[in-house]
Amino acid sequence: MKISVPMVLNSRAQTLEVEPYWTLQRLLRDELDLTGTKEGCRTGNCGVCTILVDGRAVKSCLMLAAQAAGAEVTTIEGLARGDELHPVQTAFVEYGAIQCGYCSPGFIMAATAFLAENPRPSRDEIKDALEGNLCRCTGYIKIFEAVEAAAGALQRS
Image (cartoon, rainbow, N blue to C red; front, side, top):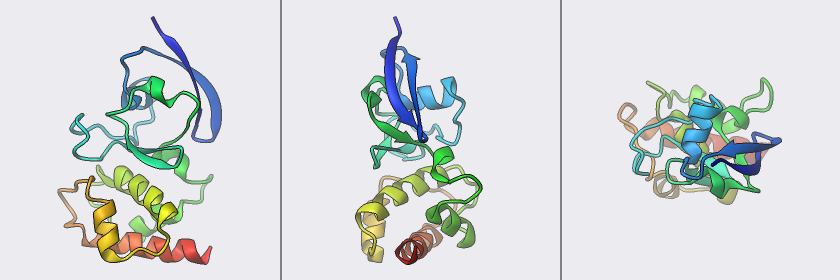
């Protein structure tokens, strides 16, 4: 039996009908076709499914969709404003922090939440904040540089 879950998803208020056992990841990817939220380990270890729930980074594979009732949920698709990328997205592109791109949405969402809490981070703080996200392509240096650049861009805006 499905249950009604009201939420604000990517700046749009809506009520979604979900099965009680669905994860937020399943709702986003399989039911709503928001495939920017990637599917990886399904155990919360890789971070590719990271989204924002009330501004906090959440691994959507570990959260039931029903738990998002009344929350503001933002996926990578909702981070940009129209054609204007979010500064974290822009920095990832400019600094080459995207190789295969599979982990990028999760890193971008985790970095966005982190920079909202810590707008002037050190490199070590960035490393600590992103330790729950895994990448097999970049070696992380370009990711850390992109987050540093995004922090600077956000301070200027």
